[in-house]
Image (cartoon, rainbow, N blue to C red; front, side, top):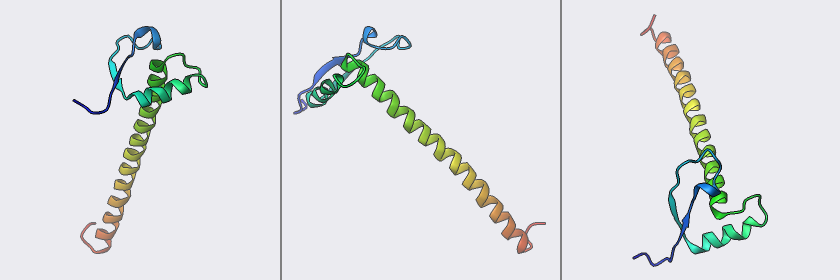
Length: 96
């Protein structure tokens, strides 16, 4: 058994935006749930579930956007490197 006590936080359809039709149960450490509960008063959220859902969506969007940016940069870097290789091979007479 895990030495850290955990509290079951149910994410229910009633506490989520309408686009979320199915839900899952997430285990949060009590200290994290307490911190989130403290933030609720200073946010537009009424429930821990709504707050956690919003935060996770925001974080995932940023991570996915960063991944997309890296993929775009990587493909650009590949095309720059290939053109440089082609230029060098031409200058050496290996390509016409």
